[in-house]
Length: 464
Image (cartoon, rainbow, N blue to C red; front, side, top):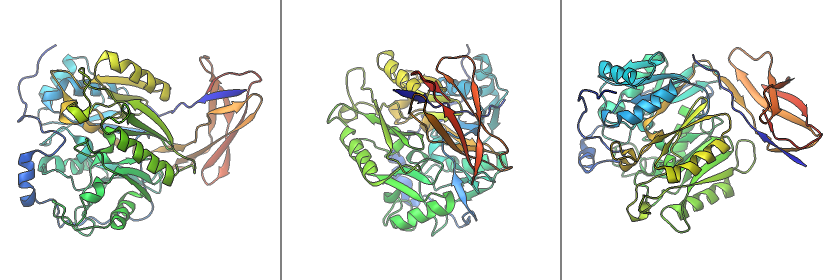
């Protein structure tokens, strides 16, 4: 008889009035406006302040790793959504808010019950709310060494947004590496990038289109191999998987239909047969399964979550917004995802809770008449980014889904810290039990640790 294991991810913990009107011009959408398209040729995307790539071995963190800060830009037109994000995030980490109206934002948050103890403000001008696309990405030297930020050329003519990564880096005291000078002048965007923390990353072919000959940004033309080399040099990405762009996703960002849940699990949006981007998504996933394996040398596991239509039943191929449940963000032990209306949200929230036991699942409405974020072609992941902890404890473990009764199960994990690891334990219990049992792990060399656990002689579900 088989027993089902449920993995718990453990993280170190860190510790009604209306705002006065300080909104800027009408909110910029995630996509490029017609006005912005008109200024592309005269906008300077590249610079001559060359930032050499980091030296030595580097690693881009995965989104589920421990973060020190969640970062957002305070767009007053979406203050209700942002307030809910901050309220959830301050329970897990620090929050950096980009705003030039600290007093007003502070007053709004405190009046609505948000504790500001873990909130810091960054007084910088900005252009848009879409910080996922323009903020930098966290890398580490030697897997768990010095933290640094990598900043690509932002693919929008929004100069104030473009300086935010340098401001973040200065605020947290981390070096920054910028791909803005030829031949490393790489255009890229955070919504079209996902990393597993082990050198594998996913994107749509937008990354190639925006850096090929004739691109509208004035960057040097690059082959796919040259793009891959820049990503390896600056971010340690050695396997860069690129998928065909979707016909109805106007921004071609993979976070609008896909999410890495762990090193071997892909969550993808699904549609009714033949509808909208469903066929191309399935073709892309089949391409991945046919040509690539996870970092563990195993086929990727694929989970599907239905994308909801509009209340009248419309999908993106017939006028519906690009609603999805994959545009979610990890914030240590919490996952924040977009929701739309109760009749479709219930099953999606239940699926997230089943897929990610041990996490606090928080849904935030992005489809209401007052703050319709999804109409701007973006959701929760699009308006958040993160900065990893300065001193990471990195644990990589391939979950064990089943085991036989009385079987001795080997629990293997790679555990790494800059100061070394002296001891490690596995905690486990029957599902629903109060007390944990523990087993010492023994070092196996090369940062590998092992514990053997004997399964009970009756069928139970275990969590560890």
